[in-house]
Image (cartoon, chains in turn cyan, red):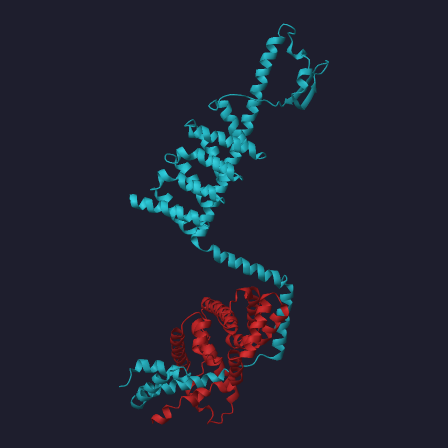
Length: 343
Length: 227
């Protein structure tokens, strides 16, 4: 036997359709000379092929072609202009393809989470800010009232009768006026806003509070920079056991527009990298994402006490491989090498 | 008589007598000369940049072949029309994704065969839902023998029986799985190479070969059952 009948049957089907390789065809021919079964199989397949001619393939009628072309054209006309649709769908699918790589998606998620968290933090901070400012103003006002009352006590017993002259400067706006019925008395509600200044040591909680507010000054970056710088100095001196200050520094580190302010914040956080995991994560975050090379370099130095930490090593690996700045790549590689030697 | 048995060529040129013009046309689509290919590439690029005229020209190059395939496969002008419409709308929408990794011919056929397979699958599940046997006539005849003898006997009912036989063959084809039906259609009726078919159906030539073999086997069994 030159080949098995099973194989021959398969070959026959292929041979009939001209899809058999020449060598296999030769084998089949050999086999057919000596196998009646397979010859009958061949006849069977040939008969099938012939029978199929009863279902001829017909050319579509001119009518059908014209009709379909017209229908297609109408549908295409109804579609929005091809140019930008095509380009948009192209770009979209390319974008999706690029995004498809899991690491990118993961880091995008991380960034989204941090942004949301940061924004939440900012909002909460803003509330605290408003409240703090309000209470400071209140306190300042009360303190003034106290001294005023003290000196005025002898002159006028009724505080309502005090001359408004000294106050007009402090009135920001009038919020409501109500006349008491049947009398000439009027109740005026007004808000006061007084520019104040306060002197004190850096350790003074009031000063700290003001510096925290100053660190969130969106308008004036000098105020922000000075506040953060002073808070940072306080922290380096070990004076900020208060987590609010640390939080403020972390927010500045991650979200401040000015690289100088971010650098100050980074320096202030230095003593806490070892113990506070939140601080460490913020520094890692800044190392990964900060656009300014100085901040990133400083961040690498800051991580020294926690170099052996696996999350830190991971980030350093990433930085050593991917940072745009060759120097930073070198430095992080050196740090990694040191860590490996130590271990 | 081995000499007789080995005449592969003559019998299998048989089925194409009816569809020979179709085969030549469709293969012309595949082996276009370099110049035509270059101009087709040009057309595709223009269409990708949003030129409707270029896309229309592409449609005209392929729409008859698409209709022919869909018409024969579905046996219904309405279905063929729908497939034609859907296929070219899809091509228009996704032309930007065409990266010249395969020929445009293969790409457009891929879209068409996918749509056809969907249709066949829908039909099949509908038929199974109905659970109705199509085998209505009680007529007894050996289809395969009948066809073989057809030319010799001068049968007065020849036209009628041709029609009946055609119906039977369609019924036998409908017993195939959609994929077997598709491979058989592309190979037997449209005369494509199994390698191209594999490419269109996202599979290997080897799998296409096996599918074709299974299809012929089932068809013979089905046609014998119809006696």
